[in-house]
Image (cartoon, rainbow, N blue to C red):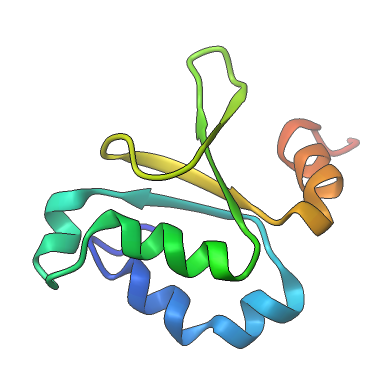
Length: 97
């Protein structure tokens, strides 16, 4: 999800789908873009946290570091603990040829 500051509205509009399906989320969060809508990055993190999602930042080594909130303008993963093992496998494994 890279909607140039509209990420909060995308997720707020898709609450039922997020609750039901708990998909993996990969999205850019940048404070300057959200500020155009009088939102702080914390609003996105808080919205997803109410659904049980945990935020992660990818490292240069290809690992995911849990984050409790916004650290910098970056691409973040949000994963739901109920599907964490399955989601991580899907993120790191190549499909069979």
